[in-house]
Amino acid sequence: MKITAARVIVTCPGRNFVTLKIETDQGVYGIGDATLNGRELSVVSYLEDHVIPCLIGKDPRRIEDIWQYLYRGAYWRRGPVTMRAIAAVDVALWDIKAKMAGMPLYDLLGGRSRDGVLVYGHANGADLSETIDEVGRYIDMGYKAVRAQSGIPGIALAYGVGRGKLYYEPADAALPTETVWDTRKYLNFIPGLFDKLRETYGFDVELLHDVHHRLTPIEAGQLGKAVEPHKLFWLEDVTPAENQEAFKLVRQHTTTPLAVGEIFNTIWDCKDLIANQYIDFIRTTIVGTGGVTHLRRIADFAAIYQVRTGSHGATDLSPVTMGAALHFDTWVPNFGIQEYMRHSEETDAVFPHDYQFNDGRLHVGDTPGHGVDIDETLAAKYPYRPAYLPVARLEDGAMWNW
Ligand code: GCO
Ligand code: MG
Image (cartoon, rainbow, N blue to C red; front, top):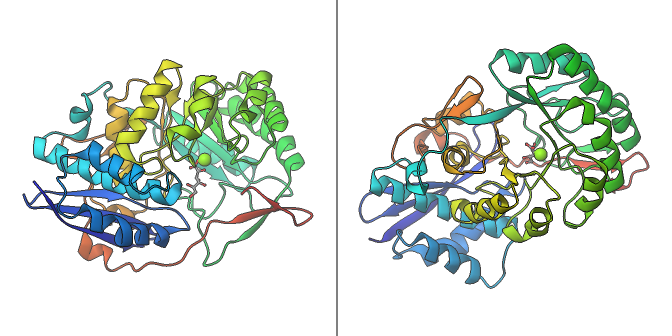
């Protein structure tokens, strides 16, 4: 069996997606996602100029060998562009293998561990009362877990707010939007938000919150401590994690569960976080960390330390990643939760898929492969539009983490 062709399809049905389609001499094809929000075209070039020429003629059944070839063989290891390109190839090859086997991907991975995949939705409001209402809306839709992000008094453009309720999208402009951050205002506000949420909805619903890398370790410890009475499912990305050791300090100060990993590329980014049990949930995802082949290694390693998965699933992860992730989640023994930011109707139409939301969980179908396809005719109607993620500055103008 041979790979005969591979193509990159760029489409913008409301937001940009980069998709890889690999074709074989047996007529079976596979689809992988390579979207890197705000830096899409660099992955297109990496695939077209440097990966696809090496794939033609290779046996698509040799997933592991092709993974190692692209990882070790580049000499230049890791990084978001490389690992997304590898992920796209890897997911397309698993899709092909599962189709050839006539099995849904979760079956090929080892079979079902659970009936459905617990997901959390992204409720957001411009202020406290709107955020309370939005969390209620998600609960009414059947969500058992909701992450709450709110506008902060005195902060003009807080992370996670506005630009769409059900379809939140931060990459909003042809050049980065400038936002202003103030840690004191944020820390003064957040515990009160969770007081009100627990008062209104009780303790049965799981609540989550994303700090989006804004705090220092000791500030993160303060926040974790302040929200301990609210029993959060997790606090996410409390501080940047290039220095994995930083989480030790946070951990010393709070029992609020910690999640991190959406911007990690490989197991090396989270090795110490996991082995030292500084975190409870690892948020690496299929598209971010070199596909199913590598995410599986991270999850198995995490299992030894009772760290569970909580894969990133924002709107910039295409339905292809969501489909593959749901198969992974259906199998992986140490599953925790899956993020699920809904895609717009335009996006869903470009990527026909068989997963369905029901009673707080997503359920994969039994279509052989990962169950997601691309309608190329429809995709061609939505040309690429440059869109950047925002940047953040402090009130004195200095750059901060967005
Ligand atoms: C999340 C994330 C996203 C990111 C986005 C960047 O937890 O879902 O933090 O909202 O900001 O994926 O492209
Ligand atoms: Mg996040």
